[in-house]
Amino acid sequence: MSPEFHDTWLVTGGAGFIGVNFVQAQCRRGGVRVVNLDRLTYAGNPASLAGQMEDPLHIFVQGDIGDAALVRDLFAQYRPTAVLNFAAESHVDRSIMGAQPFVETNVAGLVTLLQESLRHWRGLRDQARQSFRFLQVSTDEVYGSLAPEDPPFTERSLYAPSSPYAASKAAGDHFVRAFHKTHGLPVLTTNCSNNYGPYQFPEKLIPLIIHNALAGEKLPVYGDGMQIRDWIYVADHCEGVRTVLEKGKPGETYNIGGRCERTNLEVVGSICEHLDRLRPQSPHRPHQELITFVEDRPGHDRRYAINDSKVRSDLGWQPVETFDSGLLKTVAWYLEHQDWIEQVHTGAYRDWIRLNYGDRLSEAK
Ligand code: NAD
Ligand code: DAU
Image (tube, rainbow, N blue to C red; front, side):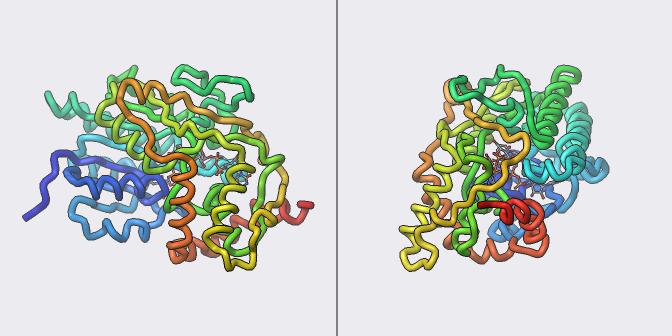
């Protein structure tokens, strides 16, 4: 007997960090068939979905959101009731090395996905047409940088992206909005702050620091380390996305954040403390001594902070984890999943580390 489901969601980028966490949570919840479309770039890892590959409500398709024929076939075959777009090039430092892949996926690929969603939505009737949703997972980086005394970003903050990554996400958000205004496509946009948690690729600050500290390697902190990010545990973000999908008003934007502003130095220091405690026999204790200040990221945004009052008051969402509880879970997860880290620790990963950190670390004092 085939399992029951009331909806089918086309989830893109579901082999990446946030997408995997979203798909896993949804598979545990049940009731929805998930068609997971992921190109499997360096950031996508099917091994993260090992537990879902046998689930009849999870269908994995390797492919590109910019492949119009493929996306059209998926719409025809599975008749999704919603599209959730997590697929993206997501790393700021890589966008500084080369912006083209960011334009291809975050702008051109997204527009293809929107175009095919529009075609599908136009063919729907009555209730199916009313309830269809396209949800774009976006970022707080579109709003640019805050000064220390500025209030946190609201949904009305102006777009002022600093990096090529942020510019590509901002362009994407404008296209999503334009498809709503021009064509009436029922879209939702979420702009979230920095996520952390299981399955994050170790090019991003928190998993990189955990990985390097365990190996006794230097912990590279850009500039003075006083940049501020607003951290949210990935499961809380995923629950926020689901809440917006189910309760959000078409055409609206919702900011999602953790109300957890920390400097990068504080974050790195907390990871070191957790590791000192959880790995008392480590020859690299105290891990703080591995901290190395390196050349800053060009165009580095000084501070992000999210005002998430709208999603809290209108939709009733709020995060479960504090930064302390979420970080402890995260460090513990990486300690327990060294095999996962080893798997992503490929030659291509080492090439990236050399490219981004080689000169920085050799010039560091
Ligand atoms: P990630 O880089 O870990 O994963 C991205 C996934 O998208 C990968 O599995 C990759 O294979 C896939 N992908 C890339 N290009 C594709 C394409 N053309 N077609 C199909 N699949 C493709 O990213 P993440 O951190 O999980 O971020 C997911 C989304 O959330 C992104 O849109 C990002 O902008 C947004 N976001 C991330 C954060 C964060 O802190 N990580 C915060 C706010 C918003
Ligand atoms: O704010 C949301 C964004 O958060 C998402 O849209 C992006 O996809 C995601 O990558 C993240 O962007 P950041 O640039 O803030 O994350 P990252 O982990 O790369 O860096 C966090 C901070 O740490 C930032 O101020 C740069 C700094 N940093 C980062 C690395 C990789 C270092 O000091 N050293 C490092 O080696």
